[in-house]
Length: 542
Image (cartoon, rainbow, N blue to C red; front, side, top):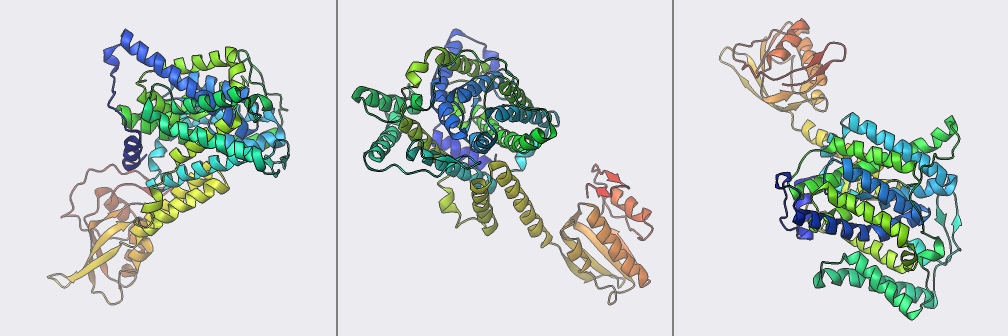
């Protein structure tokens, strides 16, 4: 993640400097801090796990089991101690269509395959590619995520039972009106107000938990007739049990779950690796991307076999943990254990939570996730960056997060290549012996190779031409091909061409082609590692 975005997150969170080194050991004070931090996180996990389960269209217990399983395994073997993982909205909005069309058993099978794909990505060390995500893509990513979560909550403002399954989730339905709408809006607003005010009063109790507690107490105390968690489904449960997904082992089944698995795996790794970088920036730790990929994969594979909806790292809960002082794996383990205890003995209380409180929590997540400063900087950044930010946001809403990030990276890469391609030019002059000198400036690669060829005038040039690459850089095989194309033109006219300030490896490759007379007396020995394959034509170095 770009440092500017990390700095903005840290500034918004007003992070204290609570760094801890493993050399300090687990003192009683440290254990107390870790356990209390884990308890705080577990309390904040409950409402979001339930809300995301509703978004995915599954029983709330499926979301809670996922939060427990994914949270526990990633806490044990994840790439960054202090990170918290669980059921997330980014994955839930993708799962809803699968659940609506094929049922929850297909979801469990998809989560298993998703985990295996993530393990494979970790083994292949693909996590390092997260550094290629540019800042405009990040802005579009978080903005699109916020909009998707917001849109997913609008279904709670419809009359229960009036929505229909169109094969892609629940849609349609009659909007609330009159007193039910008034109560819904009022309770949602009250939840958001409490969440906003609570950090200014005390930070002992997590603000989302306080919001839910106040609204739930009001609803229960006044006996208000409003939809509650228990009206949708019971969340009372025991220990998660091993369960092989009940799906047919066939090619048709794989065709159904594979696209969803790929999308979910990509989204989960993107969010997890971005969270890993954010937590690492705050705690002064680096690395661990591949280990985090493997941990997320193993966690999701196990979750799919224990009736969970899968998950990934959670930025909000990770920030709560870090701000509470959690720095070791103990905090994450404690959070998962406390969450399981809530499932086993706290179900009657959770079932009384009004849905309006959960919607209020999610709306505050939306407000905190959306990068509001991006609205003001769009007019000040380069047009390409502004376009990428808007594009990624739109694609995230219309398609999914993984596709949006890939599209954004591709567009950014193409824009970068185009800008560099336009930099190629040459300063010409005549030497003491009448030779013409081309001083090439700008990178020479596939995007600028055609422009490089157009710089030369073989018919008008003298019999000897010198091409100086001191201010340029030969990047790839297309650049070599362009150089050879220019050499062939001069050779066809019976003229001599000399190349200067190229690396020794470029000299050998060009001389081996038999077309060029290379003057290398004044060339420095760059001692750069150059890999060239005659079969593939791939050149690295200068």
